[in-house]
Every structure is written in structure tokens, then in C-alpha cells.
Amino acid sequence: MPNLNRIKAISEKEVFHILRDSRTLAIIFILPLLQLIIFGYAMNMEIRQVPLVVDDHALNSSSRALVDAFIQTDYFRLVPKGPGVLDPGELFKQRVAQATLSIPKGFNQDDFTAQLKIDASDPNSAQMIQSYATGIVNTWSAKAGVGIALSPLILYNPDMKSSFFFVPGLIALILVMICALLTSISISREKEMGTMEQILVSPVTATEILLGKVLPYIFLGLMDALLILAVGMLLFQVPFRGEFAVFLGFTFLYVLTSLCLGLLVSTMAKTQQGAMMTALGMTLLPTLLLSGYMFPIPSMPPILRRITYIIPARYYLQIIRGIMLKGNSVQHLYQAGLSLVTMSVVMLVIAARRFKLRLS
Image (cartoon, rainbow, N blue to C red; front, side, top):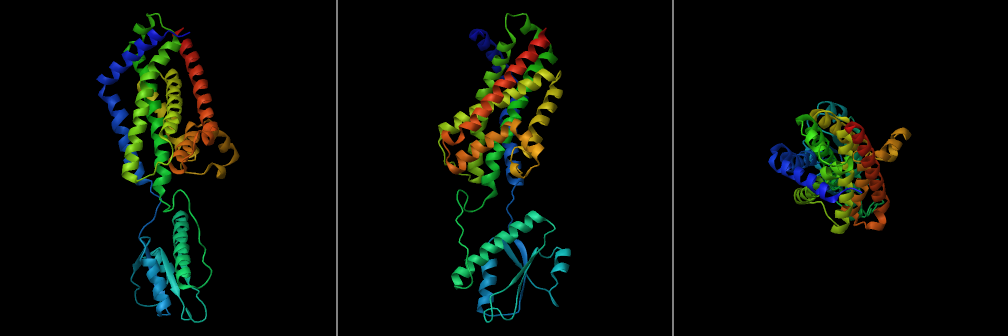
């Protein structure tokens, strides 16, 4: 059994080092805020002020009401039509407009058919523009009493704000990066500075060293999580509909998993620089691409879907989005929590064994 007094002594040593190391303090408190602000504003998938050219041949009250329905929203911006025949292709080539609305003469007499052309050189933007236009037309049709209006009911994110989707994911991304980075360099620093020999002459085991190193960073990781959550809610108005105790418990598991990943990295790297590069490589791209943060997992090829099961952020994304946006409870999220516990235990055991081999 590990000796608690020896673990406490190693933890106290690590705390003193953290307080005296300005670089570590910057990584803990400043880097997460910078990442949240930069990623939060840069990864905004919403489109506003889409330049729209209208070719209205009807020029009646109904056509004007339809055009007003478009330009009264924040999604579209009316661009004046130039002289001559409207050529959507040429307008798109010149980047004058991203969409054109053509209303025929028979509008409000024979039928209510209008044509919307969209520049789909950027398919994601085109899909969103089509979605915006469909919603506007459905709303206008319902008010005018014409056509068939679809009345969708959107839950959890009625305004379709991309920040509601990305900010909880940013918490997962930043936590795994920071926690893995901190613990990966903690042991590598001891090796590089030559202080590991001083620890080894004391009667401590590999497990006690690893646990003593991890404990301070668990507390700091939770502080980081609360700081990022508060700033994210303040800047991006993301709701928090779940219970705080549930969030804190599952975040503790995720922080522990991330720290164990960092410990595993530290047993492979010989220098702090090598540890930092390895930790970033094992956290940044896998979390961005394979966790469901940016791309839906069901749409991935089968081999990549299997790889996602070893990405910790895959499970925490389910947890934090469920808690913040849907108000999920433990009974909805316990399977993801068990996955994090299993990963933590496996990585800690592997790290302890590798560390023992290094010591021998």
C-alpha cells in the first residue's frame, strides 16, 4: 500500500515548485483563457449579413413583404441590383453576392413561386444559407396564409447558436491539453534538472511518486475547469441547465484521465520539450478531429470510429454538452463516466510499470 505521508511530501514539493515557476502558472491560468477566447470567437459557424441580390419582377405588396422578411433579419443584407439583366453566376464570380432571390411577375396572382440561387463553392455556408432562407419563407408563408408552412420546434438551442455547441467542447479540449501538458513536463523536468536522483535516494515507490505528482494538478485542473466555464458562460452566454455537483464530479474524472495521460507521456519523453510536443500531439489533433468536437462520429469511416473509443474527450463531450445544454443527470451519463474511470486506471498502471522500469 502506498504511504500517504510520502505522497503528501511529494505533493507539497510539487506545489512549492508550481508557485515558484512563472511558466507553469502561465500555462495553468493564462493559456486556457487565451485559448477559450481565440477558439471561441474563431470557431463560429454562424453566418450573418449574407449579401443578397433581389430581382423582383412582380413589384407588388406580396413580393415586397417577402423581400422585407429577408432583410429584416440579421442573416441577409440587401445588395443593390446593378443595371442590366441579373446574372447570378457573374455576381458570384465577382463576390458581389452569395445568394440571389428572383421573384417572377406572376407572384401573388398565379402562384407564390420564387427562386433562390446560392453560391455553393463553400458547401457548409450554402447549407446554412438554405436553412436560413427556408425558415424565413416558412415564417412569411404562415403570416401571409399561403402555401404550406413547416413549424419546427427546436429544443435546447432555439437560436441555433454555434457557441452553444463549441464552447462546451472547448472546455474538453483545453482541459485535456493543459492537464496532460503539465503532468508530462513535471517528471521530465526532474530528469532534465537532475533532481530525480534526490527523490530516488528517499524511500519512495514509483506509485507514490506518480500519485504525489498528480494530486496538486487535480486541484489545479478543477480550478481551470471552473475558470473556463465561468468565462465561457459570461462571454458566450452558454446556458448551464444541469446540476453543478454532477458537472464537478464528472469533470474530476476527466481531469484525472487527462493527468494520467500526461504521466504516461512523461515516462516516454526524456526532455521537457519532448514531453510538451508529445502531449500536444496526443491531445490537440485527436480531440479536434476524432472526439466529435468538429465532425460527427457516426459519419466517420469504421476504422476511425473504432479509434474514437480511446479518445477521452469523446466521453467528456457527451457529459459536458449533456449537463450544460440538456440538464442530464448521472443516470444519463454514467456509462461515459465509467469509460473515463477505466481509461484512468489503465494509463496509471501502465505509467507506473514503465516508471519502475526506468528506475531500475
